[in-house]
Image 1 (cartoon, rainbow, N blue to C red):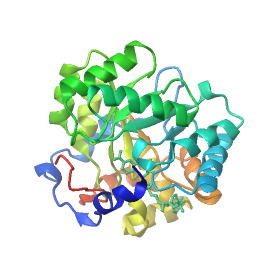
Image 2: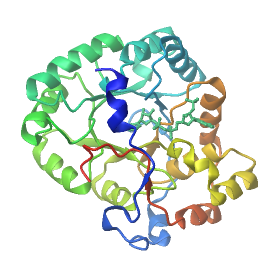
Image 3: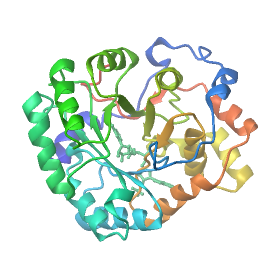
Length: 308
Ligand code: NAP
């Protein structure tokens, strides 16, 4: 599997989704969301680092190695990859070249949808560990509930990896509440995280509420809406007010939500630094209300096998 195998389906972008999953814009008023907001900071002993480095489409070997190394040396504590990104080897090399000890890094990868039969999960993870140069993962996700995904069989393999200590946490990605209900009922291990597309143009209020009720971490992918967030007038206003970038506004808005971490993809030093600085600044209530009030439901990632 190479990244080019994915592009036709996974790059099926720019399909705006009005009114996501039938949730009306006013289903969760921002006053209610305000109750679940917090400004938690990461505590390595009990949570997921709030900021991770995304690596989808970071497939140039030198660029990928160097971006991972640079981010870790700068202070990032979390790196996100996937079998399907075809870069686990370079991510592993970036970790190796950094000055940060493996145990101080929260490393996550994802099992692709063709590898979700019981034996395939176990064998593909051995290959991922080998490429990443590690003998354990902090978090392993099911990339999508699609193709070979079978809750009983797939989750039994995840339980096995959890029980033997190969993975510290079990995660899922692109799961809707109905998939989360089944996964939580089927797993013996706790369901730790759901990685989903989330940004000011796709706030996923129902998943934030689900995560809060069930103590699940949300990891926001495409947190910059793959660049679409930069042209939103409300974000331009907030960025100007604080003299920060729109990327920082989007990331700050996300990490101020309860149980939400972000994994912006950045390859160059400027972007890696800009995103890191988002942890140092806080939106005030007026900014948050302005962004919460955006009435847009626009997906950037919507492949044909998506479960919605
Ligand atoms: P994203 O992080 O929203 O946007 C990445 C784009 O924004 C890149 O073009 C990047 O450019 C640019 N960028 C980054 N920081 C910037 C800054 N401060 N100012 C201006 N531009 C900036 O999109 P994404 O890659 O789709 O999502 C992030 C990560 O989420 C992925 O890399 C992957 O790890 C994960 N993901 C998971 C799934 C899933 O199904 N679970 C799906 C999609 C993504 P440069 O590369 O040039 O720095």
